[in-house]
Image (cartoon, rainbow, N blue to C red):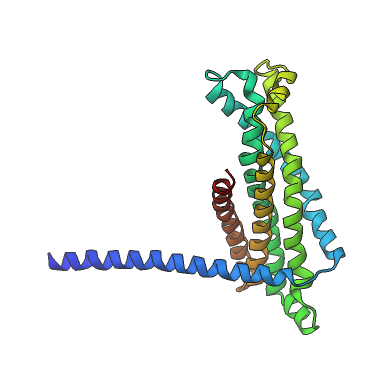
Length: 263
């Protein structure tokens, strides 16, 4: 009996130690990320390098963001219709869809889509540069990898994600109106007029702030895990996985914190 109790205690201790180690490692990793991002802000990259990344992050991400936004509008319309049709009626559908899309679903889903597209590509790209010693070659030539490789990607993610959020929100609202008109027989004028009711500019601000933060998280995690890649091709795959998973978790956590702070 005493032996069983000792086993239970040791198992509990091991579990507690593993939880503690996970928390300490997570805080340490977050601190390293913040220091890494801080260093990138002072790298002073060239505008041509930033413009190239703006094209990739922004323009070339528009098709996938459009697709995600259209389905976001469809989902928001169906859910709002299902939950609120018996309480407030369809005449307020546009107002509720606007609030859901702009403040919550829009920035979060755009952030998660970009975490999979941008975060994965950046991590794989920078990680390949690390394992093939291209980053070391830049350092040997007295060229700062932060200036030419890292900083442009992080800045582009910060700048272009809010723009994609605005573009995606418009697409989501239009797709929502089309569903409301052709499926629920709601006149387009009624849908758009209801948006003026209870409209709050803080909803727009919240969506922009969220998308700005989510974009920074995506660019930062991709560059961070790619920059510290080890272990050859297998290490590149691991870094890519870590970047996408970390970005997704951090986006959801940031969404909660920003919502609580701005509501």
